[in-house]
Image 1 (spheres, one colour):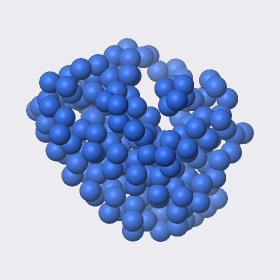
Image 2: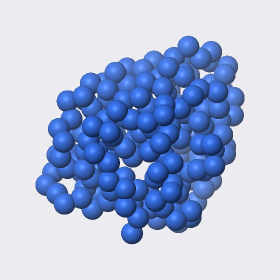
Image 3: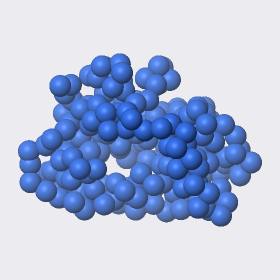
Length: 195
């Protein structure tokens, strides 16, 4: 079982930087640019924004879900469990589900405005997050590992936006360490895209 345990303070630093980087990348992006393809096969940049927005909203619930330990996954094995849970999913249906979620927004600028609002809330909530254990997606994770997994998620999707934004070093380092801790087939994103 791959392991990567991240201290709370390190996870928080990387997570905060990753949220700010994603928010800054799309803050002033013209709407037509959001309809352009992302690096995610079949997704536009608009789809990536909607996906990150949904994830941050789910994460707010994870922040509120304090629980007793021990952890069932760490910052690396979370991704192996995630990949295994989605291994039987029909990729076309996954794309269609994402498209419906994206289409729930009246226009791209509305999704960006909501993303920026949720970014402020998730940053405030992460600052107040106690060091401990939290329930998320059926797992128990330490706060540091939960924050680290989302720093990785954010930096991967920052690269997916294909806007030339420089990933924050702390989050990029965690993404590389996560990929190194996992078997290649258990990484549900392209580690080579991170350079």
